[in-house]
Length: 186
Image (cartoon, rainbow, N blue to C red; front, side, top):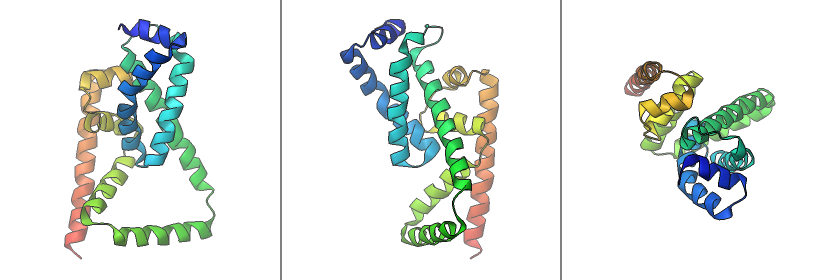
């Protein structure tokens, strides 16, 4: 079915079309959100919010881009907004809670396997990337989206996406090498 027609049917309240649309995109969006948030519960909640926004705004899709591009733009914008809100909330965590959280994190780390620790470090390294690099590398690595489509989603040139992915990979490689050297020196 044509993208514009799908959006129109969703806007008109066609439950079957929306259900098929949901089935097609829910796992993709969950992977995207998880790749950026590293928290399954937050990612699941955010996916629901994304679908609510898509449902409420389907009438505004004009077909100037692919429907998937429009969906990913909504998802990325909502995810970045969620990350910003979470950072603001974390500023106000009382100091005594920070100590308790730190202790809980240490306890949890001691229980994890080496693979889980590597994954956690990789995820935290991804979190330190600038927003555009993080978005590009998550779409590229987690979603395995072609760079041309990433450029459409991010509203930038293909060469800009290539540069962002290259820089993100270079930064992550440096951070992982530093961490590996720290482990070797223990």
